[in-house]
Image (cartoon, rainbow, N blue to C red; front, side, top):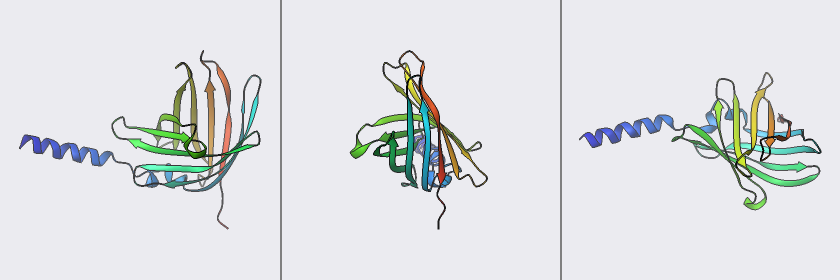
Length: 171
């Protein structure tokens, strides 16, 4: 009987932690078609970024951003798959390139009050990282400002900048 009660309590707790990302206060604004542009600057280089993408819920616990990204004119497909991890109460995101190549795993947090998303991955020897901090802007929350910071193996900033995403209006 105690085991049954404990199991029921655990199931009740788990169901309250499930996240419908398509209905979340943050991700519901990501639904639709977007264009983006910006620059990432480093000491000796500048990367010009342009993107076209579509955001949509993929089931109850996943959100997908899929499109194309041009870096200095070289255009490649990309896909972000974002999910909520109940066990860690955090978000996980996988970024893939063409045909599932170049898979990079990020972890992060969402503030539903501030409408922000922060994702981070560790690179290189474990001292480098890529951090993406996104904030919704505009009265209609139809602009996403993505601050991207890349650091090298000694912790120095190698590239940083802002990519501005604008939701495309329906004709």
